[in-house]
Length: 77
Image (cartoon, rainbow, N blue to C red; front, side, top):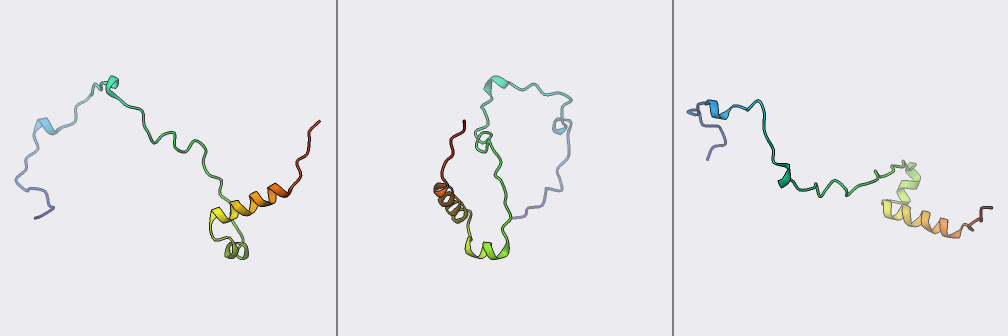
């Protein structure tokens, strides 16, 4: 089976693009992928020696959350 186009194919007027298309937007559905990433991820570059210890973003986040839990919360006046 060949993936090359048929050499006997002739382009007809029916194959051309129309100057205008009328879409029925009542049939449209919302894009289910549009709301998945509402906020872009923040990228942080680690130094080489730190990256050897924290090899995944989950490891970095776990360590930072542990440090944050040890910091006493201040009360704003």
